[in-house]
Picture (cartoon, rainbow, N blue to C red):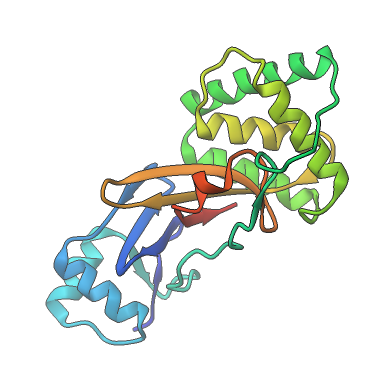
Length: 218
């Protein structure tokens, strides 16, 4: 019987371990030994032992004959960061600061009130409507630079998901799409997210994101 990832479950390999994100439950997790052994076998095209497969099916990670192949999340390897780029100066007025503050406050409220899966669905739907723009596009880079500079004036504490959603909202209002990337690392477990266009990170330093393995790209 062919098996697939359950809907709204994504995964990545961190070293030799699979790490999962369940968007419906807003939860990251690893599997116990028997279930992980079965998953490794399925991901490699093999047939797991029956007992291991039973342990895996109880986790809800996979489903029979679903639409999502058992493949890890892939994203362009970040090669540069707009935040780290020398020489670029933002040019914005007070209206941009007010707008960025508003979008940040709204994003923070959405994160509190809205299920994670619904937030992801909104970003995915909006990006599908917007034209994709490469990381080298000067208009996109200028807008992202303006957002980041105005963000530093706002009193809200830094929080990766609301900040990323606010930037995507700011860019989307001007017709630009960018990727929302979630990444994880182990020992200790940490999750992070950022905005990326092609191989360029738009709202974080390169060193701050390259230590994470992408687990979801929207």
